[in-house]
Image 1 (cartoon, rainbow, N blue to C red):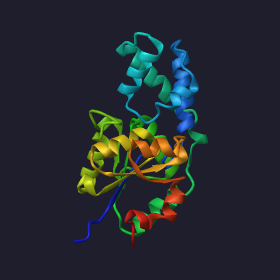
Image 2: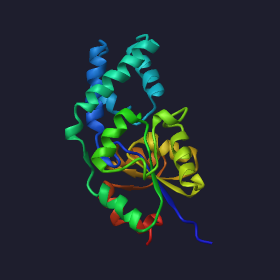
Image 3: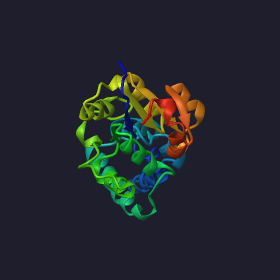
Image 4: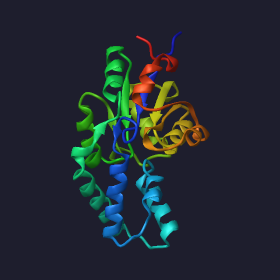
Length: 224
């Protein structure tokens, strides 16, 4: 019996070149709250859940972050990010990869730690219609990455066992979540994490970007 794979994609840094826009948006939001955090430290947290982001923020700044301040930070970040919508583009090969999967009748979904208020910007840049392609955002699950909830929900929407899924992401948080739900993790270097970081977090294959992944799609079980 042949097991048909399904593909579960992260969004920022995986399909869309938006990681640094998120970093700068968070920097603006933090500065607006008088919280001094270096840009490189923010980058290391992109892709994790907002709750984990906040917990790490507390540890690194020794500041008390109230629920009201967390809500303001999220709102400031979303506003700053949406102002950069015109600079957000699909990564090389992203549209082609999704089109190939569609033509090959291989199911796929998108699972992002972002909320729909920011994910909508990326989906528009990618020409993905959430009414056609399953999209699971932070709004829809209890916990985000590195917890596996997003990928579990995405696999469920596709009607597939998560163990048959290939999780494609650009961060260690994606790979850790893939390991926790017993899916295969494929890492992309397009989000700024290094080869060894992704490998140690559980990636079994690593590619430069979606175009490179498409060139090797047969190695991941993707066949017409």
